[in-house]
Length: 231
Image (cartoon, rainbow, N blue to C red):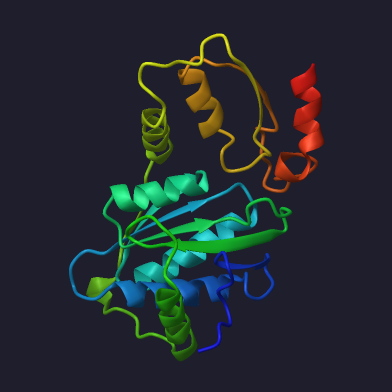
């Protein structure tokens, strides 16, 4: 089967233009929900996003699609992509979704899926979801519609986990770090993690507006962080 939606890193495009529309996101979530919901037991999906304005639209559409097939949705809010992979596994979820276009401009967006192991879906899973997307899925019965809940402590859980990956006997005291958050998904978590480990931080571009992610900052503009590091 030839792929029509999934690329090398999920589904991507310009926001509000196919395939990054609310309609496609809803149908895609319904297809993924049907693929992973094999029985009447509770099935979970966690959804995170970056700071793009279109994230609100896609988050809502994905939630509708997943709950329509009976999956319970946990909304993480703005978190880095690794947080979705880790929380998918930590919460014993069937599926994780990250709404992000990484270093691309703010007008772009993407939908990335993670399996229950916290890693990218297999080619077989993606092809199955595409087939269900094309064929359409039957919604759950009214009494089986899923619920949606915002996980208020998602960021805190990820911060605590991230600190456990740093040797416990070490701290960052005396180390001055200049951090460029690119007005993106890590604008809260990265400063929090590094400060709690003792670093002296100088933070830039940590005031997202929904339209300024990666604007003259971040990985596509390293000259910004170079300049401030030298000061």
